Image (tube, rainbow, N blue to C red; front, side, top):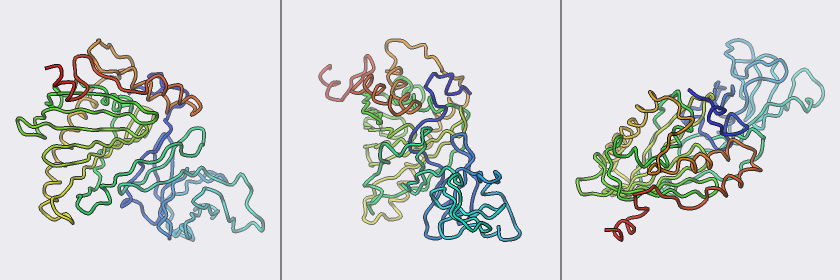
Length: 357
């Protein structure tokens, strides 16, 4: 699949932002190799429960910190919240700095460090902050009050694996009103896009062949916080929030996860509520798989042959560029797109639709 350079996105092959790298339940109390954002990394859970993610290679002689080793001291590499290199037993804290060399009677040199990533746990998942410039996080992770509400049925995320498409193709869906009918069987009554700094929002509503009754309306408020975390609130017979999260694995390859939570009729939610959640989960995942079928077989749309009644693809791609360029340029891209944008011949709201009738 095409690379970042072929899409003309910017200076960096991989974007700046918060990215999922694992489910919390998958993180062990031993180092595990991880490949994300074009880099070899290692992830582990310390004795306090703290999760650390850092680049994989020891600066001493480039041994992999998660290399398998069944003999000697290296069988137990986690000490407190730190990790030992299996080769010469250098110890690195969760901040990536070497704090002990067992055969050196002095402080480790300043250069003895590996790149460690800021880590957040949210929605039962592990996220890291990635920035080619090495800066601190410039925006907060999204949160959901519903995740902490006992009347809501939570989810375990589905690992959908790696797909051979650049994430640009996935993010394009945010402005693509014209695919809803052919792909999802949805008759849109209204559709609007709103860009605000690092957030891209899609507001839509209409009938849906699998998620509403014949005369029902599915209202959706979907928003990206940064380039890789999509939350979508659905209001119909049952209130639901879908979570679609993706992370570039290589330049032109993307790892995806999917989850869905629903409001139960009981507090706390009971088995009946969990059964409803499972039904909605299955429908939501099936709808997402309809996009998958296209992405897996399409060629790279590095240029779009856009017609006037397509959505605001150029604005979406301009918004997306802020994450592939130095953060000093972010406001330049934001100023070109911030605000509300419509798709020609589709009302931006239900009120606008009724006014036109």
